[in-house]
Amino acid sequence: MKFPKTTLAVFLIIGSVCCTTLASASTTTSSSTKGSSSSAIDVEPSSCTRTSRSLIHDDDSNSSSSSSSNSDVEPPFVDAKLFKDGQVVTDIDDTPLADVYGCCEIRTTAATTNGEDDVDASCDEETTSLSPVVIGSMPQFSRDQTMQVLESAKQAWKGGMGVWTQMSLKQRIHHVQQFLKELQNSRTEIINVLMWEIGKNYKDAAQEFDRTIEFAHNVIRVISSSEEYDASWQTIGTTKAFVRRAAIGIIMCLGPYNYPLNETYATLIPALLMGNVVIMKIPTVGGLAHLLTMDAFAKTLPKGTIQFVSGGGRATMPPLMADGSIDGLAFIGGSAAADNLIKQHPHPHRLKLFLQLEAKNMGIFLKDLFVQEDKKEQTTTTLESALDEAVLGSLSYNGQRCTALKMLFVPKENAKDFTTKLVKRVESLPIGLPWQTTKDGSTYSQITPLPNHKRVSYMKSLIDDALSKGASIMNQNGGSIIGGSASTLMVPAVLYPVTSTMKVYHEEQFGPVIPIVPYDTMDEIVKYGRDSEYGQQCSIFTSDGNNANVAASLVDQFSSVFGKININSQCGRSPDTLPFSGRRSSAMGVMSVSDALREFSVPTVVAYKDKGTNGDIVQNIQKNFKLYGTSLRVL
Image 1 (tube, one colour):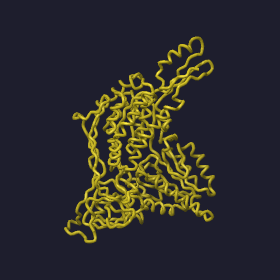
Image 2 (cartoon, helix red, strand yellow):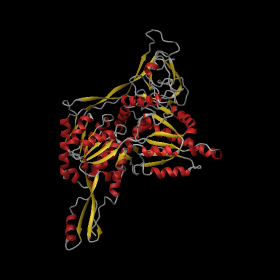
Image 3 (tube, helix red, strand yellow):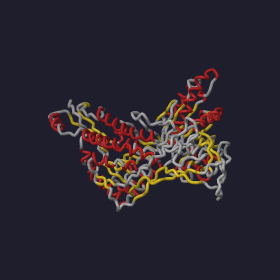
Image 4 (cartoon, rainbow, N blue to C red):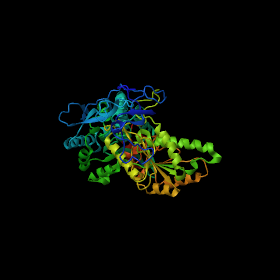
């Protein structure tokens, strides 16, 4: 049977498929994988090899999990543009451009075997590969261009007296609301670009856009209704005063590639509403979506309120920081990069920092979770739910979330059984391209291509290190690459047993690798949490068995270690109304719809002594106050 050239499946476990060049082109594995586990891949480059993961849709399959092809999806192309003096500029011949690649172009080629014309009759005569395709171009700023952006921001800030900063809050809210309305016009384009550039499936890409808009509206709701921003006089002894929150200054905003819109705007929108001027560094990966927002900004915000810088971070960011005019840094990414940026500032003591960094979130499965004879039905249900949460928490968006579960700690006597159950779930996940669905259209690909080969190489380095030190890949084809040497579509790897000698025990993988650590005593759990470099979140999974006191003890001990402790659920940032924080090298600052407003503002007190004619004088002054669009009540 031949597969149609135009059809590519969501890569599901739908039976054995035979491809002549599968080992050498369609499936690539880590060199250390061979022989490390009974479930690891062992292939010969020139042989016809069977694999349970199909690269191409099997039209003869009657499985309900077979995939639709969605093969008519065309790649987008986003033209390069600049944002100068509040206007979008497309004539940029004087600025170098870099191609931006997305995944994937689907190529089907005739197979050959060792130079022979005839193909083994037991094998298919075609092989499919996935190759990056150019989906846009990004301006590469020079140092001079970067410094021009800073000069424009300084003029807009004007020492705290610029147009945007001196507006009332009511006026700024109006402008931001108009921006959000305009941004909706680009929703379809932005979602499409998120799928192609960073491999986010359609459902998740749509949720990122919609959640970003919802977050912004929630921030506006809070700032419009909270007493904290509805300034009114209060009496303290003989003094009358009110507190208003005001802008910090020029904020440099650097967002991540994995949630380029949502996490960037979680700092950008509050910073703008509080009257700050913003310079946004467009991420090298995931940046095309920001080019699609420029028109909305140009139509709705005053000149100079927001600026964009694109290109290599090492070439553009240090000069900005070294100038000393940046007042605040909103950075979401790695701690090493954050430290390097902060060091560039000549006055780091005056630099307001908001940092959301890496994490090594623990998934802790307590002994009482596993079957007890007197409570078999209850504990079985709880365990099944915990396994579902473990897979969701570890592999949502390929594990490329700071909030992902990065380590699973399981009692040693139950670890093998736990791993077997987990592997079954991992092997059932649909793997494919972001816009593809199962045949009935109910589920989008849950494992999608990683954004670049750098991420693939890092995953392989962690896997190789673990295998060399005694771990095994427990799931079939774990760690392999589907679609040839140019592809970045990686099958998740479940590693067991993982020990403290391995890099993956200590380093954040930020990808589709699930380390399982068997433990003997709770002391091992406590030590890992206490001594770790990170402190964002943990998840504790337990039943209402005999060890509820153990869970309670962990909550008490970890309350000064992690920013969030989850009970019987995966880690996550939402809901956005709750504080999202971290300790140690995981965060500095608190993110939520209300906390972010505080992070990007400082309180200013206006006060007077309540004697003589001061009250009358203040009443006359207050008539012209640009207080956040509220009525000032004098007591």
